[in-house]
Image (cartoon, rainbow, N blue to C red; front, top):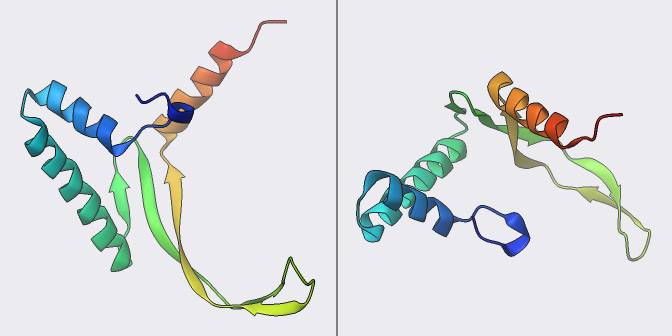
Length: 107
């Protein structure tokens, strides 16, 4: 994984696929690009994307609502919009919680 704020990047995914499947990097990059494009297209069509053992991505609609301009303090209306929501699977939650438990010092 890249050291930039310990963030997993697309290049890291390409490298992992390249190493795991023993294929050239160009083909690995194509696989990752195709996967990302498939997820984006499915979400744009408002389909859920469920990855077993990982979680579900889904599009939720937000209605127009009142807000405040942070610079002027004036009232504004925030436009309706779509947001992507991620709900982790029980397996992912367990893995994350086990990792946190291992990092906590015992009292």
